[in-house]
Image (cartoon, rainbow, N blue to C red; front, side, top):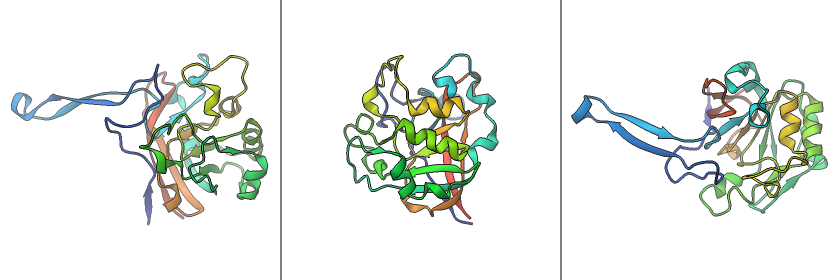
Length: 222
């Protein structure tokens, strides 16, 4: 069995979205000398590093991540590859999805978008110039019956639509997936190393009422 780790490492210089989000911090609060063991306090938001986003991120009356069925984030996945080449604001529309092989997606597949944007993870504007899919592309994928969506970028909506504030009159691809109960995994890494078809898992922490969670995402060769 060949397993591929698709999660970034949580560390103190890790990217984050800016306010009102907070950067990841870790502080040692227990030591061998004082306590006989080592333990740490960690500070982060629910959208830190490789993480899962659910409908609770957008609307208060939806279930938190602890209610998410694990069947949603474990299963057969197909990788759709795009030659982003670190191009800022690289938009993926329906025709591009089809050219990348989205017609092969089956009901209850997990769709993974590979752009190579993770190569910019330590560079300036990793978040603010991220690749994205259009609203129409999100609708196309929901019509295909996917059960989860994942991408090797920190955004999958156009980052120019806002991060610190999202206007109420916008329609986002996030909304399209959330209304259908489709969880989204963001910030994958090393997707270029996996085959086009894999078994994919991205398990969130079971945090009551949370609007998202860091995940350990990985793929297993079929």
